[in-house]
Image (cartoon, rainbow, N blue to C red; front, top):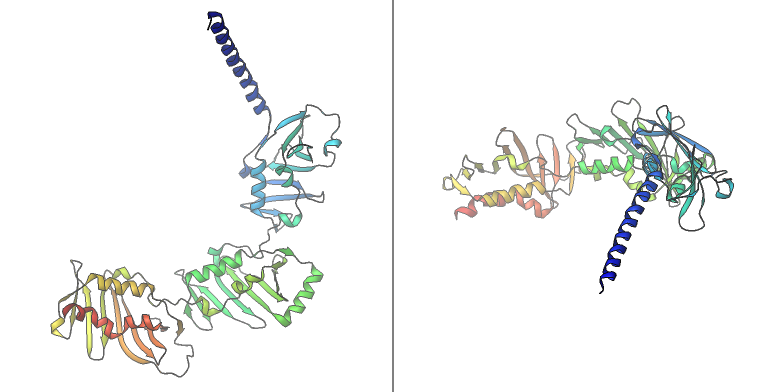
Length: 448
């Protein structure tokens, strides 16, 4: 290659680099110039937006919640999504620096969004028609002469109905504030009642006192607090629904909240495979998913805590079991080894396998009864046959938990919690774990 050609190529390369550097600066300036709106969504205190029918909707923030008008709750998630969408509003490009008319761009009757940050008003944003090419829409900003293009999702976010902006939850509340629940079906005064104790544990009080399972109560509260209307029912239709539902099914739920004098109430109706819910407090009468019915009026039995040994079994330092004239004591000593004493001197001081005791405690910790009842409940006339007594003592506190092992005819083994007067009917396979043959076998199997 000649010297002249090399020089030409070098000069050409330098020219291209200069052009690219020159083009980069205007592009950055252009991007900065197209930033139309910027704000912190958390600082917005009120807003006004267009509905699909052209009317304007005003929303006001109170604390963490948004309200429509006076006390009508708005869908907080939808409002927050809108604010996030417009918080960094940038135009894709400028269509015209000063159009002579807005009408041909759909900006004579546009969708609008006006935001306030305390007493400070932000510029109103107006969105018009969709552009002929692409997925953009026309936009103008109050106080600016230009016509811009922005993504069409901005316009879609403002083309909603009043129903879309409403909080559709029938009785919104924070589940940790719940202190009691009562529910029933038809004309029953009570179907079930739950109360939370001072220790935070839940108890069933109808039909009789019995501990409630934590997961079941949480599911019940979650189902109630998140229950949403699929659509709103007009007043005239609601009267027909309530009258027709009397023949097929109705129900109710009341939840009392910490710090509130009056409970929240939900009235439930079903007819012809459809279900509805009504909140007297908010006035919302809406159609709901029929599958939610069973979650809202559960059987009290489904909420019972059916684990007989509901505590940390790793704390146990001594196990005592007696049956007839035989007794056994298995105790963890200072070196961590398990040893036993019994009336049979041949077994006194014998070591017990750590694995066997751990297996027993693991079995107790996961044990789940088929049924449970309290001493005050009627449980037929079949007598319970005593089998033995089981005491579990905590190593550090010395607390002793006392149980009686019984047999209920052919149904299986029953554990009676003596401190709480509760009965638990075990599955036959799990019941064998608490029979004397298995418990005495912890030692006898080691010393044969």
